[in-house]
Image (tube, rainbow, N blue to C red; front, side, top):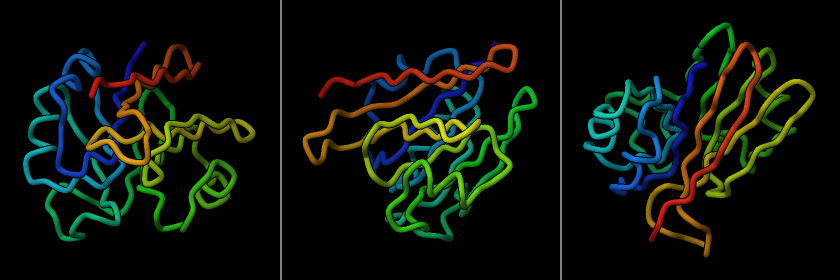
Length: 157
């Protein structure tokens, strides 16, 4: 069994509770809008990090790519912010990025899990400053013998 931490939309704020929420994960995927030079360094204290550029990030920022493809235990994961599709959602993302078992995105700040055919499409929610009356949130993706599950973890204000 492998657990992967999913985080997005930190917008320059990494809450201390993220360390506990993502403790023990093997990898952290940050789905963009990092907005700080130190966020990825702090997340790397928990586990190795792969991150993508969001619409609020500088595209030349070290450590950020427009998209990433990650394979863990034979499971192909696509990571992007989602803003490149305008209004991202499960159907639109699955159509735009075929050939993946998991698609992780951010941008909307809404924690969400969709199953589109055999694809798990996950938005971990926004972990940074509270916006739109939505809770701050991260997620954990579990891969166990090819089975995939996601658990969202709300962070206190």
